[in-house]
Amino acid sequence: MSDYLISEKTLGATVGEVVLQSVRFESMPLDSGEQLAPVTIAYETYGRLNEERTNAILILHALSGDAHAAGYYPGESRPGWWETMIGPGKGFDTDRYFVVCSNVIGGCKGSSGPISINPATGREYGLDFPVVTVGDMVRAQKLLMDHLGIERLLSVSGGSMGGMQALQWAVAYPEAVASCIPIAATTKHSPMQIAFNEVGRLAIMSDANWNNGDYYGRAAPDSGLAVARMIGHITYLSDESMREKFGRRLRDKTALGYDFTMDFEVESYLRHQGEIFTRRFDANTYLYVTKALDYFDLSGGHGLLEETFRNLPSDMRFLVIAFSSDWLYPPYQSKEIVRALKGSGIDCSYLEMRSSYGHDAFLLENKDLNRMVWHFLETTARKGGLRFG
Image (cartoon, rainbow, N blue to C red; front, side):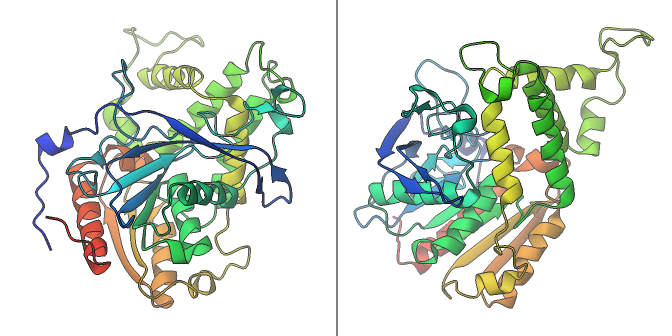
């Protein structure tokens, strides 16, 4: 195995300026039985596809993510959401691999979703957009891979909802996946995870401006979406990280106000997170994507993961990663995946990283996560006959 030493210089490396691309397909079937037509998929690419088209990696985003996973748009200073992991010398090394990330269908950043124009009406779909599943998201991504001429992916990876999509890829298209790296993910939502999503959806639908999803061109349900984001954001953190970051410090006060204004810094932080989220996300999209998460069940409702994994090819490899302080997708859910994979005779490694960051750790941890992913991909590539240098 090649030596790999990650440095601050490596962590600061970037793919540079990137361009959002899109492709349109005539139609695709959905798990609900409906057809979505037409289908637009927005995506970005980083690195170069080799002549054999065997060095491609598909990155899948989480609930609030999009296709902009790395690099910078011209004139903007904010990098892609996984800039810490994608780039020259990083875990997803763009000097070696061709990395693709697409916005999920149902999203609001270029792919078909409730904000798209319904060809039947000439107006935004709103709630006329069909309900989509994680399986549908992956089906759309397969169309994109076929369009790019990529028959087999070296790896599929993502955190949270991205990890669920990665697992779905492995099960739905086993012949098209050499390896899978699900991070901080699960094979199905627990009642608690469904409950948090339902409270967020209800916050949006209770906003007076929601108007049954028909708010485009008028005041949007920003208050409801902000509350939904605040609820979700709490689950992404941990008790330890919140205690370290905020404690019980007061905000611009020397004493309690004994009223219902904001007293504590953590209150101000959450309200700020909710407010900035409304500037970049669509409320209906939040409903659709959280519903897709709640519907997700990798076993198809049978509850037998070993049976689900039994048809995977013997040479497929998995690296399952969890974080010690993640209480939204706790390590036990990742361990269930590992047990089922090993019980089915599949090559699987498990890494539980100690972290105080909670569920968001996959976006914040750097050196160790980069190192583990880099080495896993290096081994996978060499087993598949790829050589570098």
